[in-house]
Length: 169
Image 1: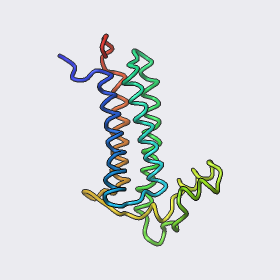
Image 2 (image 1 turned 45 degrees about the horizontal axis):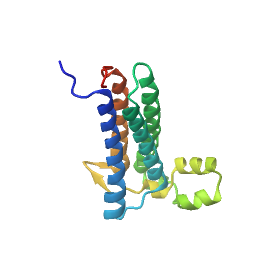
Image 3 (image 1 turned 90 degrees about the vertical axis):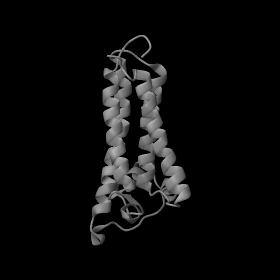
């Protein structure tokens, strides 16, 4: 039975998926709908970009054997961190109104005023901006759909090393 996608094509599609997600976030949600990303959204974008770069590197290099797991591991880690951030974001959005944290400063302000470690800790705690739901589709908010995307990317990266190790894969 002929394989539909080889290793390089599989990873190239993973890269296209990540870039598509970023383009939708920037040009549809941010530019078209005018939804400004909260700090957690920006961190999720970084996770999506990192996963995309893992897929791109694997597609361009096309390693064989065990070396494929190095690329997949990087991609799975990037998508996994993104999934954890998205999951935390979904959790914050699900809190009752009286338990949501207060709104905080912008990411730009935090980056100017605090060391990077404190910025990351502050962002991951979340704030009222992150708890606000501006858009839904089929009952899921943007972070909910982002969590679904990250889970799909993890699966995609897990399957990649098992694809054909033929000459043109």
